[in-house]
Picture 1 (cartoon, rainbow, N blue to C red):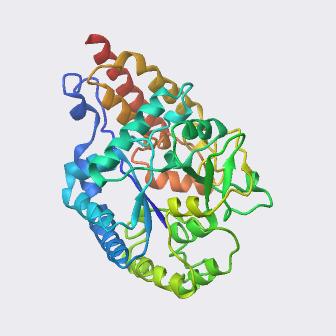
Picture 2 (spheres, one colour):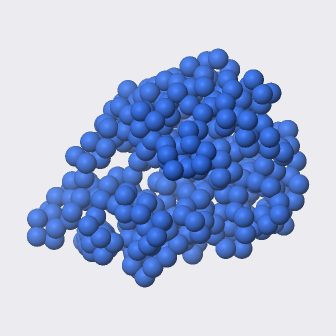
Picture 3 (cartoon, one colour):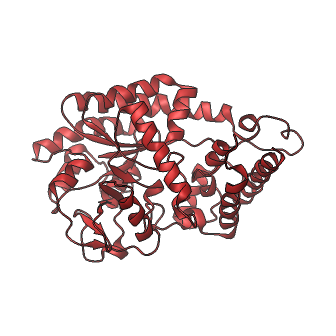
Length: 383
């Protein structure tokens, strides 16, 4: 089981009339909202869920986390005790940390990959400093992957990469087998999105034919699958925040490893899989895929002209902020969440986007982010 742990630095409503002389952190980032959300999620998810994982890890069960650099910074600012319990969990020796971009950015989609490589190296240093981990397996922001990214990750000496098991690529093949990148050796592990989403999205849905989802029922499903492994990759906030404790989600988390063990299944880390298994074929993704929305591509962040324009403007800041104290601010603006808020998707995907969007509309988000980008440019050129 792998858990995605992330918090962005949310932006405040920037005003060209009131905020021009404020320091960047106070002018751009909404510290009150960031603190309030971090405290709420800590109470509902981070503390109770991690206490369960720590106890299970002490009993020999293995787990995997992906933790962004922005989450670590938020924990230090708003609740250092949360970071402490995560470190205690890693100290059990049964938890693996995945490599990724420090800022949870879309830098792997830039025209060049230099910024991407910088952020990956920054995350590697953070992993060693905070969690005493040497990251071996990579997962990109939102599981974004294409053949170009796979080539770069292999050059960076990662042992493997995790991405989404997309039906249109797999066709008749299974996401429970290990693959390799096209014309290369990099092993590719695939998220089993149906089983992962059963927990992440459908767990408390009373109109779902399989409700209620219990640990023994779910363990039966996994036991009946064929293949080399089953990768469950889930947003950590599922456990207590998105799915409230009243739904039984924390009890489910606590009892699932034991139910799996009863049926002869072993919880392992990606590194364990990569040591024991060999790829059965190639996973060819000439265009970028992700774990987001029904389309499982990058339209979640780049699907309309608003998003594409902001994406272009963010990249355009690189030369003017390079080597200045505004680099960190610029990189926090790169976090994928900010482009997510500009989505204009409708139907089921649109409902989810709207739920997580702090703005009145995508157009409102565009104006605010565009103003901040231009002010960063103004400050950088002034210096």
